[in-house]
Image (cartoon, rainbow, N blue to C red; front, side, top):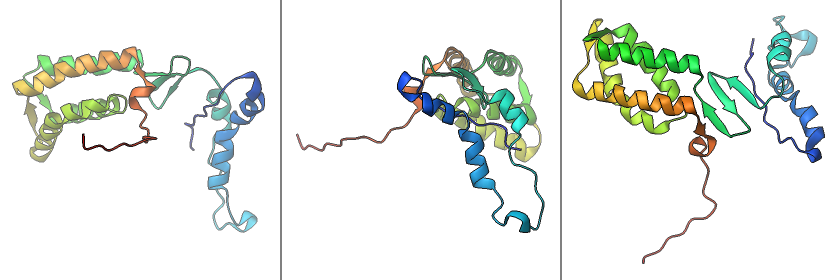
Amino acid sequence: YIDDGITVALDTPETTGLISRAAQAVAMALFLIFRPLAKGLEAINRPDILSVRKMLAEGGLCELVIFLGWLINTRLLTVALPEEKYIAYSTQIQECLDARRISGEKLKTLVGRLNHVCYVIPDGRHFMSRLRNLEKASADSNRFATLDDETRADLRLWLTFLKSARDGISLNRIVFRKPTLQSYSDA
């Protein structure tokens, strides 16, 4: 089943019709994309792609929602790392800083978690290269990885990034827009 979907709509007195349609948008889109084209002649009898029960329970319109691991606040136009994820991620980083060596498996988990944070802090990707190189080296040799001083400094910086992600990042910082005007000059 596909059970994660989100609809965004402007809620004003002029858009009341839009709001009632928006509540059904995800279900309608999934039906249109995945509907059987041959109706009763389908070779394989398939269940619906949408879990209607779960969609009704979780898919209502609201201003504050956790979606794909992010706390989205449409009133403040921010995206934040939920508190429980912040605690788990920062605790793991602190454990890595306290340890002399870490297993390749723990490093792989940490890289995955920090990659998740890079979706709202794109500049953090620059500070992933040492961790990814260390992850690759430990995976190739199937052993523990030793953190050097530069990697430890990156992890301490990641603690700052995590605090920023927990406090919320403006959507304006992470939404890419095509410029509406380009100007060139030789002056």
